[in-house]
Length: 458
Ligand code: PMP
Image (cartoon, rainbow, N blue to C red; front, side, top):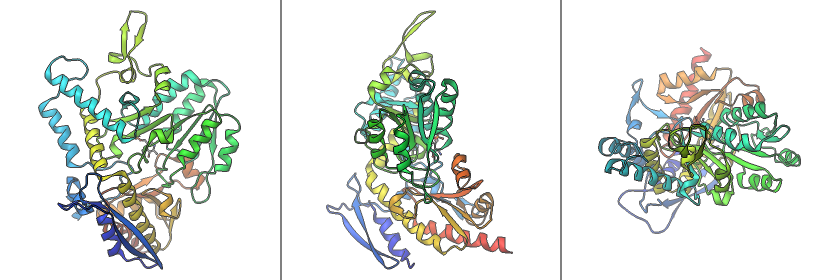
């Protein structure tokens, strides 16, 4: 297939409108991919600025550094994204000018810090269209959010013999908490299988639903295959069968527009560090009636209403689930990350990633002996591509790319060992993309893969 890279570069570059100019109406750009004319629309960013990827990259100081004497090509955003200056500045301003503990002091600094953290909570709520800020529980990360639900909701609602439906493409973080719960309670676990090209077998899902599971928990987007699962449909089906649904949004919330009310999801879990925010802050969104009925997960500090020596009562949401000193700087930093993404517009983020993924899928076809796992088409997947190259170990591949060309990719089982087993693999290499990824960086990746083949054929 013939791909006009320059055209794609321009299209990707113009997906976010920045620069001083503003545009009233969207532009269209036609790109030749193989024999097909593909139209990529370009948009004014949600903040009404015309933006190019080159501009966006200037907001990320780390992207201008060199690695082994080469410009950094960062293709590991699915593991953790880089951070824009706005996030770094917001956190630094907090520490430099109004750091104090929150929800405790009645003096100016503490009140300012509390107000900033609560404002961040509201921003996160709006970002996913939650009804109320109190439905946003700040945790450390997706893993902690899922564990919170498994211990608290699971402990109260799951009993011996109850069925929990998961999928075989889950990250360990959406598997182990349910295994532990099943071991504690005697519940059963069943798994939705996948097709050859990495889609969930929805026919098998329907059959599992006939067994009336208590809980269905699945990833919205696979961190290995990139598959975007049909969450809305799956949630509606689960509800019709009487099940509660938890969605692992670690890979979807950073990359797709998410509306929890439209999805009608019961619990949604995600991490700040994968969506331009800092590490150490994650989110559990839950339906209010569910969160209110749930017992605390961790005890101590401000999660109480009244404490006696032998028993206590609990605070309202969200404090009931936020014991101990909060990740204050991190929550405020996450608020800044949400501002940044909202200004770009999540529709634009998705479009850019689909364009870049499309381009990568095309370009990778030039590499002999390359096997790509997951859906073949960019419109059915997110910006994550897992692959193996001949019999080169993915760790060797990642080292060569790093040493020779400054390319950072992930290699390993991606915390999805059952999925690896399904494909009879110990590991894959994985390249993943975000708002700052350029087509030129895909070219460097492809060049690196050719180089690795050369080195291993010597
Ligand atoms: N679920 C998925 C799908 C993920 O990709 C990840 C991170 N790789 C997690 C859960 C866990 O996220 P965290 O490490 O931030 O808790």
